Image (cartoon, rainbow, N blue to C red; front, side, top):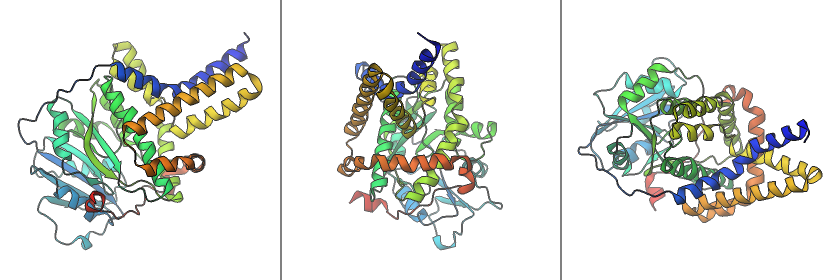
Length: 393
């Protein structure tokens, strides 16, 4: 076999395994015995709920109202209003501490650090909520179940609060895929759930130490954070019933701006996967090894697009290669369907799948804009104005 042929096969395997991996993980997950044991927190832990807002405050009243409706009493909300006019919010509940930075921060981690330095008291745990999120009434109680089991970091579920457009529904489908495989399956196989930027919580001292030890410029603080946690061989728990409702991108420009930042972030930090993978091999840590494998995976649209290109090339080069790619795509489609089925996806999400080509095209546009992503915008513009009552109807 010629060297070029070997290299060609290796390159294809380097991309193609991403199509097969979800189904393989699902099969391993099915074979693994499930433990239904959960512990209850012996006391009502004290939470600091950090809500960050940058420029936009249109959705702030909804997120604050949803937090105040939680079935929990021992918490304080720290609203970091960065470059925001909060005069329209009026008189707020005494459990809400409004912080107005003297200088523009333009950074999640800087906003979190700003809040931590102004805590009214020493909190047991910190949870991060975005300004477009809505919090389920049992959110803090569900986080407690994971912390009671001894975990130091927990990722909840970000459910869609809007399915008002085909793009929003496809965005929700993508989230269901990642929540299932990168959250539930990964954690229950003994590794760590990936972090999603909000709906996550940590022991206070752990998160404060991260903020002290790491300076993150631009988007992607959750990527740096999850790597920092797993490098210590701590596991990030997945709490599937700790729910926050998250706004899905509903417009073309909104999607392109957001995905440009996300793609830029992946290219900026994907090398960390090699570090964690190597660390897992050296220390024989399954947590680190499997997490490192997941971090090396390209964004969903990118490995699908590259796989389609390889499949097309094999139409002219190799019948065997073509059949292997068709099998790999079939396995991926089955794995994707499993994630939607297990997650009980809304019928709107299934109907939106016909628009996948358009969704991929918009993300290709995002890829082309990713080099200057942070110059285009520093935050996603929000358009949904739903309250928790709207969702529960």
